[in-house]
Image 1: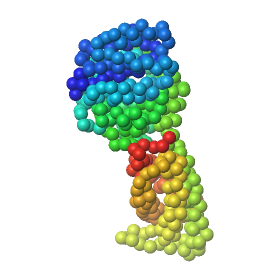
Image 2 (image 1 turned 90 degrees about the horizontal axis):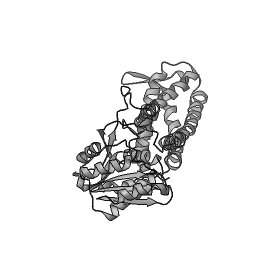
Image 3 (image 1 turned 30 degrees about the vertical axis):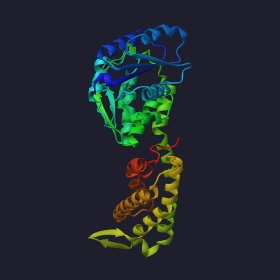
Image 4 (image 1 turned 90 degrees about the vertical axis):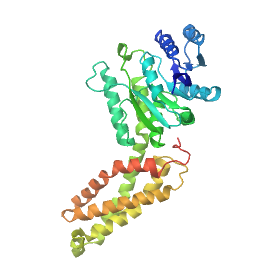
Amino acid sequence: MQANQLCVLIPSLEPDERLPKYVDSLIDAGFGLILIVNDGSSKEYDPIFDSIAAKERCHVLKHEVNRGKGQALRTGIEYIRDHTTLDGVITADADGQHTAPDTLKLAERLEKGRRELLLGSRDFSRNNKNIPARSSFGNRVTSSVFAVLYGHWLPDTQTGLRAVERACFDDLLAVTGDRFEYEMNMLIYCATNKIAFQIIPIETIYLEENKSSHFHPLRDSWRIYKLLLGSFFRYSAASILSFLVDYAILSLIMFFIFRGSYAETTITVLGIRFAFRALVAAPIARLCSAPVNFLLNKNYAFRIKESRGAVKRYIILAAACLVATTVLFGFFDTFVHSNVLHILLKVVIDVGLYIFNYRIQRNWVFRSSAGKEDA
């Protein structure tokens, strides 16, 4: 898109001289609107905001009290949607980490009609010595966790330079979180609602080790990781309860019903020898634990009030996992001759399917009919 078709949205709390300089460069770059949200700055910063408001193609909105970066972004996006006809928005930070040339990179790659989130990605590789160690390590950990849980490798999960076209405004307004966790929730929302990511390399700028940032390392990191891992921890708790039901029934069948000569009975299918008791016990145990797992995941782990077709999708996934578990368990059980190892074998097989199941259930089985999870 052309720069004059876009708005650059910048949330700001008590900025320094770097914000007006960035705004001037954006004006020179030809952006249609530069929108600043003053997120509750004290009165001594009014001259900075007043000087920006007086510039061509600039507008300043104000929160009387600090409401957080997430709410500031929603305030700006709602204004752009309701008061302009611009085709898209690029969000940026006020602390000097972003440049007009990089902002133009996102503008050039943004296409009308494409439902995607563009991310200006800094270089967090170990070869880049210009990044504070805590920022580099924290971002790599977050990127790795996000890749495992949501299936997308995003090299810079904390970037504030992002862009979407107008059709995605309502999606961004639906994203929850008032402070820095909003940006992580945006990534999760896009990953679970089939909004594509486009990674665009940008310059890596850290001034004075990012001392001007209002990011609180402990408080805001807790908010982000609570959000990132929250449903996974709930899913884990639900899985543990389901496992207890599954293994209790499995043990009852294998060690109290199939005793004596039955324990050694095998059958051969397509030339492969299977333990008969395992082929019977595993399906029965899973059929008993599956309804428990479904209800816990729907109502507790993913907190979905309405998801049309969830039962059908869960049955398909459960059947596929049942076949995989039964075949693997029945095959390997022929090589195991200890009751303790029998149970450990089942644990190993189920853990192998664990992360796969989480992603499939979150993204497919329990996708909300409303397009997002209920809080």
